[in-house]
Image 1 (cartoon, rainbow, N blue to C red):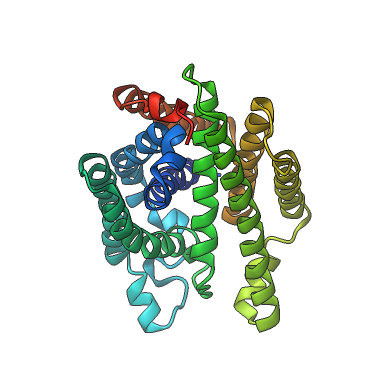
Image 2 (cartoon, rainbow, N blue to C red):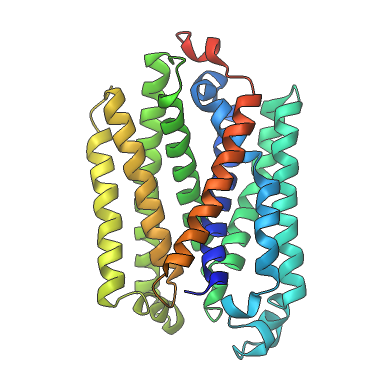
Length: 316
């Protein structure tokens, strides 16, 4: 793994937490303010880190050729797809994704009409997350396009964002209403099961269609090391589901279930990204350093935001 690959892995992981948090925030506003209250401060803070992702993406703009095989016309793509994946158009789309998400996050914390804003925002965010997943992840193997991949990848990001928000919530001193936490527990379990089903459906569709490029995408992830990574990911998710299935799990159970769901997302994302070489200590330092900066900004923003403690502690 090169330093550029390390920055790329950090960018995909952290942008997923930020964009997934924005999705959770909007879904929470559309569904019910009472449901969202215990994690509202956390998801607001995570979504407001989007400008930091613009800065993290700048080094990648100068190293696209190390990440994507279509740079410089090396992939032999059809003319229309080659035009779509031209570096200039790719960077423009990426800047639009990040800028619009940052603007939506600011809009949601300032507008008094959060439910209406969230409905509009979801209509914009859903296709953007799908196209971002294709551009930033799937286009590393550009001969195959999957319409379900973007939804599955975005759903995984929302799962990781909700798991992170619940973890941070349980570490805060202000207690949330047990009834509200049970709602979040059910939401996390539902999202975990939906994520599992969506990725399974993605595999079944590729298998039934028997398309060479789709099969090749999976075959490149079927060596012994990759399969061990995939098995580890799904064992983590299975453990998370087993912890969360009993209704009204304890605080420790919620922490364990959320942590396992986060670990699943990280492991599964690594299986998808498939770094060409094992990371060196320097690469790990880059990834951990980027994550530390992101969490420092996240924590700082969260301290400046309202805690919504009274609403979270009140029974629904």
